[in-house]
Image 1: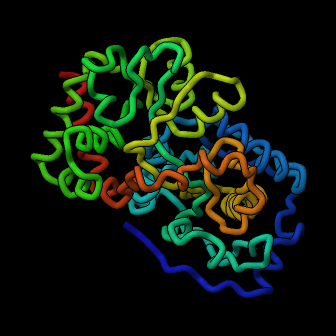
Image 2 (image 1 turned 90 degrees about the horizontal axis):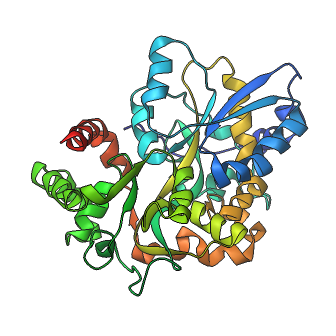
Length: 357
């Protein structure tokens, strides 16, 4: 796992980073930016992509992906780089950086906060802890139910997600071991503080798989967070896992009768990184510096994701505050990015084998 200390930023460097000349580019330049689509992607387009294009003249090709490092690894190893900037879950970032799939990001080029606070002090420490990226949101994996169809017994805990006798019906989970393994152990009685210690042992891993096996026949697997709200709306599953912002957007924008269960949520950061070997590396760095300014990050509260700059907080929609992951940290577990950097590949293989049993 590769980490670097925060770097001091000179006033002149910051002034240059904030100037339009720093962000300016020729109209012929094109940048491919990859993120998660859905309501989150729409918020990024509104607050980051479109303003960047307008101010710089750069054409941004904004594409969706489903996460993980496999596609990035294939591009880097083949030398056929198709993406420039990637929005990564920190769980994947640690591995991608340690395996040399990302460029080292020049943190000393990041601009001051809107209130003049230097970037090194404005960002929360976790946002700049990895030398390959800049954290842009705090988010959580939660689950939700439809209050119109849940019946007389609403879900309130991670244990309820695994209790098909108490709450019958299908459960929808993203098809990867991350979070699912943690939830399984917590549902089996492991304290959140001990989850990664237990999961680092063969016995703990088997315990998690055994708990998942108790609902295996009732699981609906999906690949992208964008599928989750539709599954819940259409009755494809009675309890559905997703990023908190997906459900918040469906509740706020579409009036869906969804209820988010925060108990046992797993919270983490997403971060912008630049794919190793990108021919547009410098332009990609400029995009990230632009997209992680105070104002664009404040816009992520549109979908209930917390900004990683302190100076963004006063600019957020106050109505979003109770729905941000930071309002529920006492009931959650911080994702073990270091754990998944070490065990992600081996547990991914075991998970795929378990799916076939």
